[in-house]
Length: 365
Image 1 (cartoon, rainbow, N blue to C red):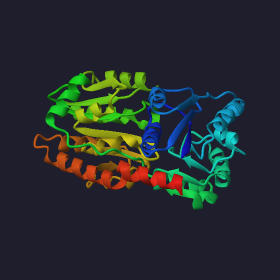
Image 2 (cartoon, one colour):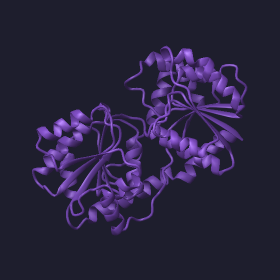
Image 3 (cartoon, one colour):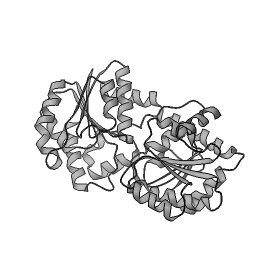
Image 4 (cartoon, helix red, strand yellow):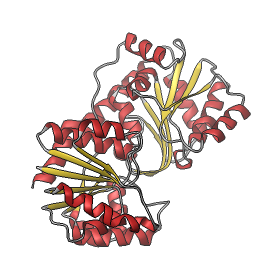
């Protein structure tokens, strides 16, 4: 089957990685995959060009990209796809697909509705989707329920498809040492990490506040931030203000995210808004125990506090610091048990083969 994926962007965020995983699975199953990026290719561009035959980037011109509609429409028609996926919300993609022949159109939503885009814009997108799309997929009940509240007519087309996660074999001590050496991280410290875009809603400022409190009690616990973004300079200033140079380590974007997860002993994840965050799920797939604070999002659908991880519904600095100090005890038994239960939970909910098959079934039905 010919499948065209019209992607909003091709950076290295959770949405883009999930979409790439799904496309590689579909390709392995014999489907012909083409990709059009509405923005100019980001860092995922080289991976897309390597794996798929047709890969084109358009770029938004004019408000909401209206000046790019004809160019996008021309590229869509050139693929002659049986099924078109729209990954991410886009007026431009919707307009370009009006009247274009295809067997099925699927809108894949990975973003929350709580901030950023006005509610009336979401309502317009969902009203159009209710008429044009065969189904609309969501990675969590949280974000699906948000969408249905915005536009109830999509309820019959809303489908829950979790983010597919590859479950990793047990990490040996030598694997951890090798990964730390690659990333130039200390070999003998307990490492608490987080990875993602350095943007406000990801609350790396909370991460630093927790690091400050923990470091006052145990200086051998180090904190590692992987990723890039507009908040980095501000965050580095906060680290300096707290005197945490050498305790909070910035390692930037890394080529192999597996090295990051193999290096750390605990993941500390903080967010104000996330539809269904990939970073804690990936950490759990490696058996890394997760401590998280999530104000709005679908993480509670995976983590039951004290069972599969430690989850706060507020940014409880003191509570997270105490949890880190407890899991970092030399015996390590509680951390290991929590990590294994988290791994089991992700396997139950997000195992790549199961979720990707569910996605393929939606395409084929």
